[in-house]
Image (cartoon, rainbow, N blue to C red; front, side, top):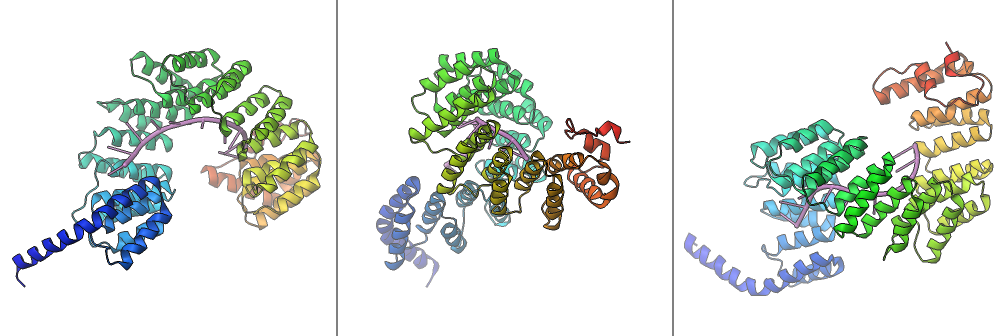
Length: 488
DNA sequence: TGACCCACGA
């Protein structure tokens, strides 16, 4: 068969197939948009059995599975394709990121670079930069930054915004600032990323300043801008600044639920409990974050009783508390010595099968210990996975709180035997135990291997030498007979 | 097809 004949045959085949698969293609696109996985699988099976799984429909099927988040099927079909374009690679990368599998996303990107005739585009870079950001792979991020420059995407707005976010997320504030300052064109997203990034990196004042600069230079703010700046106002207890932001929210009608939640939280943190409640009451629709923020507002302002009663109302209204809500409520119960409500919450948590979440386990251990029911703390503790550090720390603190120093020290030794990672909090929880047995000497001399181990571990996690004194200086020894300064 | 955003606390 000669060349032209082949071409004609292939054209005829295409024509014959086109009318058959075209409706399926649009159907698959619809399934992808509505994330109808079951229907997609059914149609896929139909296409296989009726022999319609042609080369033109396979990529559509990959995209559909990717949009439905069905990683396995998307990957399988993707691997079977003889040719893959940039668009398909982008969808695969996007799918992995949405699934939180950023490492897989990076691997697909590397495959893309190795493939012939397929280059990353202005859509690819924001995705993969986000993946390296999530993985905190700053060195990869820098390489990607370099790649965008050599491939002429170095001034693309979306690419630059994702670089800003990546540098901020990896704690490289200066580098983010350099990119931001060099940007010829900035969007509201660029500003928002800087505000949020400064706050997350501990520069709340700068975050507020950047927001003011943004407003001052006439950039049109959006919901994300205020949601980024309000936590900074709350942290700084800048009630007046927070009120001004609230004014802008009203003026520009940015009143989405997430904005109201951020306002409730800001007012609560600034001590404006009445204003927080006003925003909360005026919300048309409240979610678990709204309720949790308001509950936290009462706790922060010393009204734990109102926090508990709001928690009850929340459940009557049919809102399911999250692990954050539970953590707060258990803290409230502990501080009120309210074992009755604490046990109720525990029961609810078990019914909801939330009792295997580490944050909740830890809060339960802590609550029972503070209510002087250490045996209940232990019974929660024995059911934990015992690999994570935090429940151990809570148990250690619990023992110390109940003046059971020997038990705390024994528990710590067990922690070392079981190979659980220790951190500064472990040290903070443990050392008062030595104070309770009225002597810090054992730590420094008699139990030297343990002390050495603590300092070695802390030094390796912080990357430098940590002295005994430095460690003790950080530890609360207020009620204990020995103070760090006396140990020389 | 895409970049930024709310509650805890370790």
